[in-house]
Amino acid sequence: AAKDAAKAAKEARKAAHLASMASTQTGDKKEEKPKMSKAERRAQQEAQRAAKAAKAGGADGASQDRGSGSGGSEGKETAGGVGGGDSAGGGGDAAGVGGKGDGGGGLPSARQLQKNERRSTAATAAKAKSRPSGKIMDHFSHLRQFADDGDGASDDKVRVAMLATVAGGIHPAVARLAAHYADGTITGGRARCVALLHTLKLVIADFKTPKNTKYAHALTSLVNGVVQHLQAARPMAVSMGNAVKSLKTHLARMAEDASLATEEEARARTLKHLEYFEKEKLAAAGAFIAEHGANEIVDGDVVVTHGASHHVREILLRAKRDGRHFAVTVVDSRPNLEGRDTLRRLLNAGVDCTYATLPGLGYVLRKGGATKVFLGAAAVLANGAVVSRVGTAAVAAVAHSLRIPVLVAAESCKFHERVHLDAVAHNELGNPAAIASTVTYPAAYGHGGRNPSLGRWVGRSGNQEG
Image 1 (tube, rainbow, N blue to C red):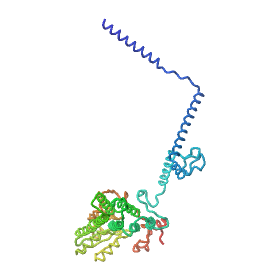
Image 2 (image 1 turned 60 degrees about the vertical axis):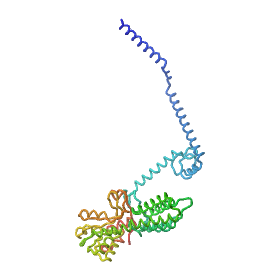
Image 3 (image 1 turned 180 degrees about the horizontal axis):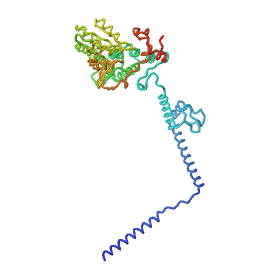
Image 4 (image 1 turned 90 degrees about the vertical axis):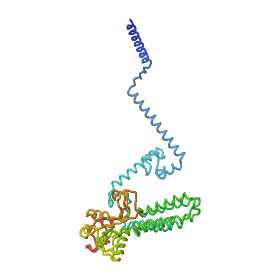
């Protein structure tokens, strides 16, 4: 009986639940939409489309009104500089931009200007990509490109003329130094660094602190301007960058020093710091390198060097003064042929010398009895790589393959935390016509001082020699 009663109660609850669900579905049942004909549906869609277009037009008009009301000056600049003015007529394309107007001669919207700018950028990139590489491969497009005015004038002369015209607000010593950097009068990492230090001394001696400005802060800004001007002439060497960094660190410490009472005291301390850098980092370091490098040379050595290096030359001269008997082979390369200066100085000192060009490197190292190779450096990087003038890597590689010791002479101010894996990521591009030019091609090579294999290239470049 109990089971029957429980079963009946369960059936009753189930029936009540079904009844409540049926009533809910009946109350929530949505009214069915009346069926529409095809013509009625088309008319309704047209009406919705027209309402949406009217709403969009009202929003654009309001945004243009806000732009002309709150930034009227900006609107005028945009009309004159980008859109070409609103007098180009109502409705058509905006002059110089290519975007459509708003039908009443108004300004293009901000979104339209962005689209036009993106379109112009893409067109410029496509044009640059489709342009033939010409003298410079695409691998070097990230480097400062060599500028050729097309009249055969060298880039150095053009750059010097440019520097002379913009040197109005620059100290005369800085403008003169930049011109020397650009035309190649001062070359070599050490020589360029010494010239920079001497120029900075002149600039600091003439510097006057502006009113309501600290000496250290004002001088730091001036040094930044000097560096920027010199960078325009030629990229700074690592030694120059370390010298400027040392000076800025000194000025930052001076800004926190309250013991300096007058500007003259601050100037004297700054000049003393520059003198210390030149004496310790350049002069004393060079003497140390010459002394220890000369000790590496023994009687009977045949030393091979490349190009012109101040420290290598001082090492060889020091070894000669110490009474050692050795011979030197100077390997040189075009276009500058800097090794001729090294050859002349060594011959004047009584050193037995041999002169060869880079194509004869293999013969010099194999048959010339070379025992050591001394090279100079523009920088020594964090991974141990050495940066030097073009051709140095070939000399070091051939010497290494023949198991000839290679020694590099460089001061600590040429050390840099940068890492290079090749000579393409960071480098300087010179005048390609200097390589193809036949002016510096020695007459001893035959062909009357001309290089016949390069004559056709020179003719295409517009620099055919007479």
